[in-house]
Each structure stands twice: as structure tokens, then as C-alpha cells.
Length: 326
Image (cartoon, rainbow, N blue to C red; front, top):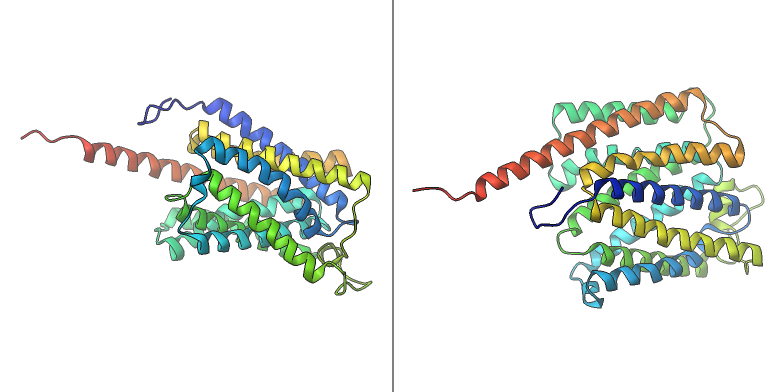
């Protein structure tokens, strides 16, 4: 299928690249979870970001050169980067304590928060059907949090990761008209690295860590140490995965139509369940499967609805552009 500009989309290739990219990010989650009892989360960011930055730099050069890094929206880009850093940090703090699949399922409620927040922030109208879909999805989130049982407080970190990711996505929409994908990725990773440097200066000595700290809190406050050879190898792999994963995801949406590729974002949940079972012999409990089903159903409906609106908008634009005969 081709676009109005003549570019030929390759949806099947885009979908394959997306699925592989998400599988790689799932492996990254596994490695970070394994290191969560040894290294501080911000130290992981510190070593991960420069490697991913090199790949982002390469993408920037492919997209047109260094001039695309010039921006008039540095304040909004900085805000997006800081929110993204808090999202990343809270996500992996949750992962230090909770099963991998549980965290991924809760994190994938982000599209629900995007739909809910787009109305007050972007002025997008949320009609009755989409409101009901969002409500069903939020019921799924509540079920995954298991409110009737003993729930680890790390669940709240996963929920915050979903909310902050939604805000980050909305800011990306606002910046998308003026910034390239490579530029956004480069500034994002640079802010991650600078933020980790600042965190290292403030928290790196471990002075706030107490012996009875929750594992998620300990992952944040643990003293920074010089990585062992084995740890350094894992950190290098994490950085390479982050860079390659980002490239695959950005390429997936570049060569494939977003409406065709986006539904396969949910394959990350499948990878989360698979990796959790392979590495820790963990499977989600019954309430997680129920919540997962509601979140997936809601998410797929919202994606289908957005595809319908996008198609209607394109038809209206074509009709408007047709010359009138007088």
C-alpha cells in the first residue's frame, strides 16, 4: 500500500520488526530485573544511555543530519525527557519486586490514560463509546492490582509508570509536528543520561538507603559501585538492546502504517508472560488473566476506533482538496 506522497508501506515487515523489537525490550527487562539486587537503577541508566545514544545519533544522521537536532521546543522536550525518566525509573523499581508479566500488563494500560488525558490536555473529544472502553480498561487495571488481596505497594509504581508514559505520549503528539523521530529520541536519551548523572551525585553514596528498605526503594537508593566484569557485560548488552530495540520500533512505524502496526504493541504482554515463565517459572494468577483480557479488549477497541477516525479524516481531506467545477 502506498501513501499520498508515493511512499510504499510494508506493513508485514513493519509488524515483524515491531514484534522483534518488543521481544528485545522484554529481554532487557529480564536483565534489569536480574541486576536489580546488585546495581542501582540510575546506574543502569547511566551505562545504558550512552550506548543507545550512539545508535540514536546514527538515526539522526540518516534522517537528515545534525541540523534536525535544532529545536525551538527545548522546554517541552526537557519536560518530556524528565517525565520519561521518571516513567523508566518507576517501571524498573516495580520490576525489582513484582513478576515481569504483572508489571507489563499494568504498564500497557497507558493507552487508556492517553485517551482519558487527551481530552483535557489536547482538547480531543471523548465520546460515549470510547469513555466506556476506557472505563472497562480501568476496571481491568483495578482487577490486576488485586484490591481484595494483599498487594505489594510496588504495584503503584507500575501504575505511575503507565500514567507517566501516557503523559509522555501526549507530549510526543504535541512535538510531532515540529520534531523528527530521531531528534526526539536523541534528546530523550541525552536527558536520561544527564538525569542519571545528577541522581548519581545525589544518591550515589547510598546515604538514604536503610537495611529494611523495600526492594523497589533499595533499587533506587543503593550505592553506586564499579561494575564487575560480568555486570559490565550485562550493562553493555542492555545498552545494545535499548538502541537496537528503539531502531526496530522506529523503523516499524516508518515503513508500516501506524493503524496496522500499533495493535501488535500488545505482543509485549505475550513476551512478558513467556520470559517470566522461562526465567522464573512464573505465570500470572487468575485475577491477572481477567484484568489482562479487559485491558486488551479496551486497548484494541480504542485502536480500532482511532483507525476509523483517521480513515474518515483522510477521506474528508481528499474531498476538500478535489477541485470544484464551475
